[in-house]
Amino acid sequence: MTTLTETSVAGTEDRRNTKQKLMIALDVDGTLVDHDGHMSAPVREAAQAVVAAGHEVLIATGRSLNATLPVIQQIGIDRGYAVCCNGGVTLRLDPVLADGYEIIHKATFDPGPALRALRERLPSAKYALEDEDGNFLSTERFQDSSFGVEAIGVDFQTMLEATAVRVVVFSADNTPEEFNEAIRHIGLAGVTYSVGWTAWLDIAAAGVTKASALEKLRGRLEIEAHSTVAIGDGRNDIEMLTWAGRGVAMGQAPEEVIAAANEVTHSVYDDGAAHVLRSLL
Image (cartoon, rainbow, N blue to C red; front, side, top):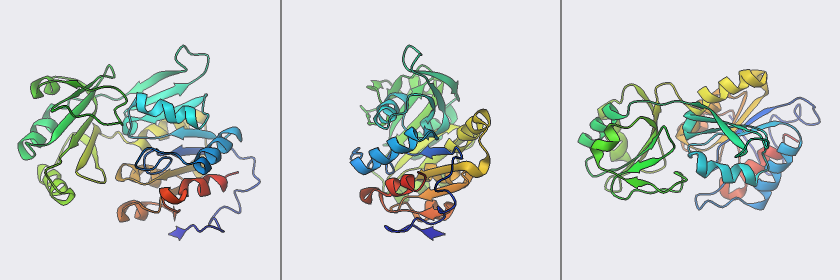
């Protein structure tokens, strides 16, 4: 494990002044933007510079499509690909398309078994579900900025009958430790899940992660595995950091995320992503 400092960026001397095209996967929350949703000027400028240099820069986020598009625009990506919903949705970006993008892959699943098990163990938790049409269904007026659209209030039975791309569970009545223990006790099967900073759970189809979506795109782009870079801070980034030839954890990341990375940069509040991105120029 290497820690990056203000004046030296480890492992980058052989990457500077090279014309090799890199595939660079960037998490959003806690990486490009802080937990108030703010992207600093140094991070924005560094990201824009890497895009302008001709590398394949991809957003890889747990956010849904409509919450991802503003970040894509902010750092100047108008061609290429993006991964949303923790790998559940993959976009192709092209300015000639009517909306500037098209969905090229969507991984759906039956949320019923997981929702029933979670509801039994966490009856007071809030539940939201992104369906195959991009709508968000939610209980108890549950709304989050990562949804990107206004959630539609429905009863729990309606959620059980939907086809899901992403399920989100949040419990304000439990500590993160209690929440983690409940999930371990349930033993969720047939899905992929990751626990956030608080009592927050993201669920996707079995085998679907940011890394699984990125690997498909790597093959499409014909980028060598050693020419991949990923930066992230959350537990939903662990597979992506392991997948990358150079995986960089943000300074504020949990211990298990740092353990999955090759390097550690500064925290999001100290523009850690900018330090890494500038090392690629």
